[in-house]
Image (tube, rainbow, N blue to C red; front, side, top):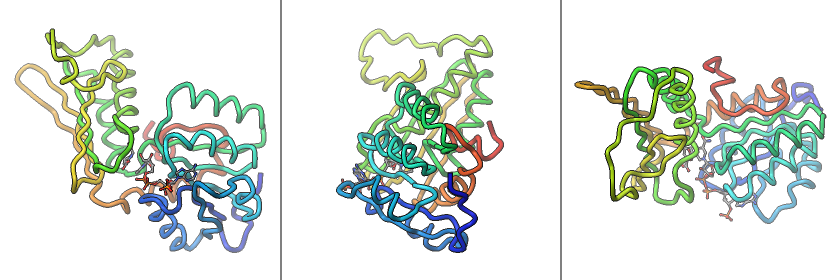
Length: 258
Ligand SMILES: NC(=O)C1=CN([C@@H]2O[C@H](COP(=O)(O)OP(=O)(O)OC[C@H]3O[C@@H](n4cnc5c(N)ncnc54)[C@H](OP(=O)(O)O)[C@@H]3O)[C@@H](O)[C@H]2O)C=CC1
Ligand SMILES: O=C(O)C1=N[C@H](C(=O)O)C[C@H](O)C1
């Protein structure tokens, strides 16, 4: 692997999905960062392997689309380029394939797949997982802009998985629910947790975790009002990924929260 810090221009960063809402924001954040150089802006008709090679990128950042991100990650691993992934669409099978490819390549590449880079979202997930064992009921509401192509959000799935793990470890059973009909109105069920997805003009990215006990409720809520909220987390991922070989899922691992 190349050592990013040896280049006087700083960490050489290639952004995939560069013309998108997130990709264009990342390009600006990287260009403005004193310790980084934006060396490639890549979109769907570009030859990814060739551009990574020609640009001598140290780190790629992927904010493309759920249908493309796994292939992009495989290409980066094969090219020996670390990759920080914000695009959604990941599940245990696709993460397992990436882990296997990293083992095969054995080239020291680091892959960070982070469902959400905003500090408020990472803390919401952390606090929700901590609280989950103490409450009978838990449900998630995620709210996003109407141009979002996937539902439920990657953040909500990651939150549900963390909550389910915490409840399982504590020996907590499922949330009480007497529903006998109209199951579609109860949202998606992710790891046993009901998740409700709202798409509304004016929103960016928001999540609420509702926890209930007899006579009380805890609501944990985060709001990303602007895409700049994701940038400190993305830059942290870029700065740290070279020293974290292998697959990491979730920015909480880079923040000492896991
Ligand atoms: N982890 C996090 O913190 C966050 C994650 N996200 C996730 O990031 C992803 C992107 O979101 P957003 O920016 O809103 O979406 P956009 O649709 O605005 O951007 C996606 C971009 O990727 C391009 N693209 C499509 N296919 C490919 C490909 N094969 N290779 C390279 N680029 C491609 C698109 O081009 P074209 O338009 O020509 O198709 C578009 O420019 C989503 O999965 C979203 O959920 C979003 C916000 C925060
Ligand atoms: O599409 C988005 O906008 C977002 N996608 C990610 C997700 O699905 O969780 C992160 C954030 O919620 C914004």
